[in-house]
Amino acid sequence: MIARGTTAPKRKLHPHGPTLDTVIIGAGQAGLTTSYWLTQFGVEHQLLERRDSLGGAFQDRWDSFYMNTPNLALDLPGMPYDGDDRDAFISRDAMVNLFRRYAELIAAPIHAGVDAARLYPAPLMVNYAPANVTS
Image (tube, rainbow, N blue to C red; front, side, top):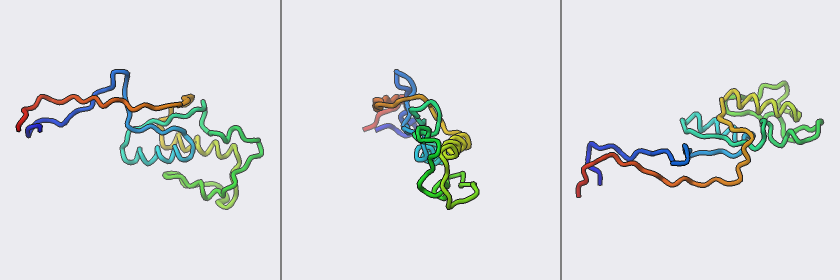
């Protein structure tokens, strides 16, 4: 038990560098939306994106590719879909540009070109302030 008037345990940096409680793998629609909400709630986080540029696997599709869900599904938190026809289907290039615009708008903390194969939890390192121990 820690006596009254003392401080609670403080986190230390891991000896191998800074640690984060929240990492999002993939900066696609779900990753960016998650980043938006974490930012709204003040949760420090990072997005790891395998590709060097945003746009995900859509960049690998053929030039004439269009989404098979209507544009109304592209309402993103903080950025509702603002295209001409909410019932139409967005093209590959427009989708890639939409995600890039959204990432910039929300200032998503993205690290591109990172192929995350594994994440390991850092051991909890606690630094207790000097305190009077009572029984």
